[in-house]
Length: 216
Image (cartoon, rainbow, N blue to C red):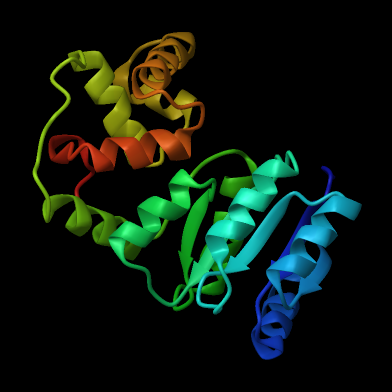
């Protein structure tokens, strides 16, 4: 059996924290290492113990942006999955820019949350369909421009990244080597001035690349 995924729950409502705990504590490979009612408490918890992923309630009244910035200052290399009943497209983009690794809607089935946690811990971006739709709407409400300097291959790889595919899946889809995919993605990182997939997704959407988006 592999190493357990250490999960920190952050929600200002005790009922919701307890619901998440009961949902996840018996899931094989999961360990709930903390349950925090405030972002200040959560930052302290991250400092004193190993955490692989934070499930962060977006709907709390606290300043989430300050929490994400605080995580960066701590050198926190874990993943943050925002759990919400609804977010605007602009809020989704802002969360990704500040370091969140995914958006999970509270009305999604429990099985989807388990899947989202595994994907985010592996370094992937999790975006529920509603979150993607909100971002697309935010993008389309502005002036649309496409990055003309991307090659056909770069566009194909970026589209696959936006679809949530992993490198080996992209390689199989495009019938190229996985090393070629990694090379193209690194080139996209360089052009966008980012270092993470979540940041690349945010930049691509912000730049109004409508023709790269997956079918919703």
